Length: 239
Image (cartoon, rainbow, N blue to C red; front, side):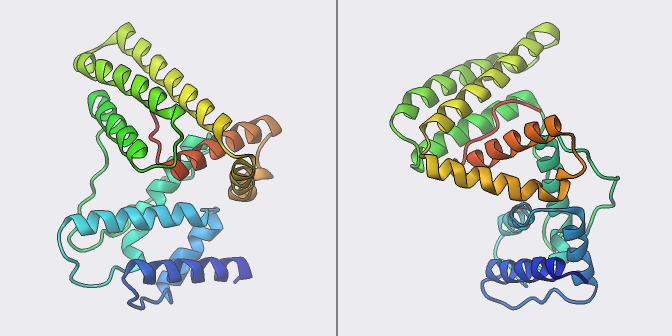
């Protein structure tokens, strides 16, 4: 067993214990093999953490927790987030997988893929991002304008078909790019450089398999994803 896999498993175990309010839940035996497999696939730690968070969020929605959540119950969410991460970065998808077990009291609740539902989530997250701070005053006007456009689109999106729907999807992609450009240009150089470096670290397991232009596209997408996470910005484009 490589040192990197062991370190990865230790980090996952520590994070899981924190999520379980300090209750010690060891990653050993079959669970250790399972998590080592995540490391072998190249799943970045932060991506794994996001999957664990998603599992716990769904568990908490069902009411007070009755017992600690084991890492095995988080695998479906971890692999879902990993799939989403690879799609966002344009990386090739792995082989089809079997669903892992769900934590007790949870349900497999994937977000709706409908356009009106997507637009509603985007507007809510943009509003929350501004309320949460971290954006300068310049972005109040930008977010207001984007939110107004999205509200109008949401009113028109139900039942929209064909060319009109494609035009709306292109507009959403354009708004997404515009928002990211403004955010990126306004960031402190040191903060942006740190995200660029983090994106490089995330892609390290895949770099040798990628052509230079594909890597550059994936790296740019990884930086944008980290910017979204840092500022809690939604993906406006519907992918």
